[in-house]
Length: 116
Image (tube, rainbow, N blue to C red; front, side):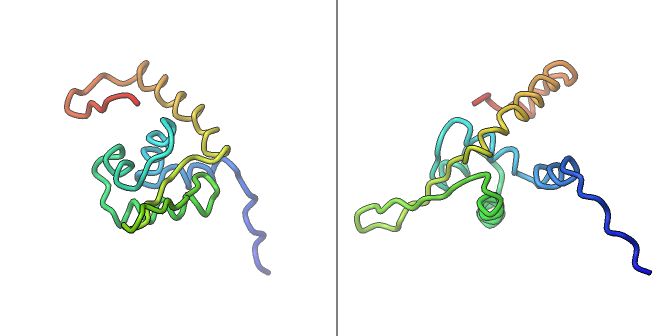
């Protein structure tokens, strides 16, 4: 007999998506508004282009972000990323993490990142 498949757990699934390296940094950066790829890379900081591209594609597949292409008059087209309504709902998650961190973590000057 084959064992029954495990029951779907939405919290487990969400943690699986959000724990991927750079995902919450990308969401946090896009909460300020849409950004082009290079602007987003600077806002996220430290993520190489290949990894950022992979994360953006995955988040787009999950309908957390959307991508549009701008025609730039003869230059290479510019990709612009923004949060979908589902992505914007992650504001509460980011706020909760921030509130928890302010209460429970000491500020480390070496890791200081400006708030958006």
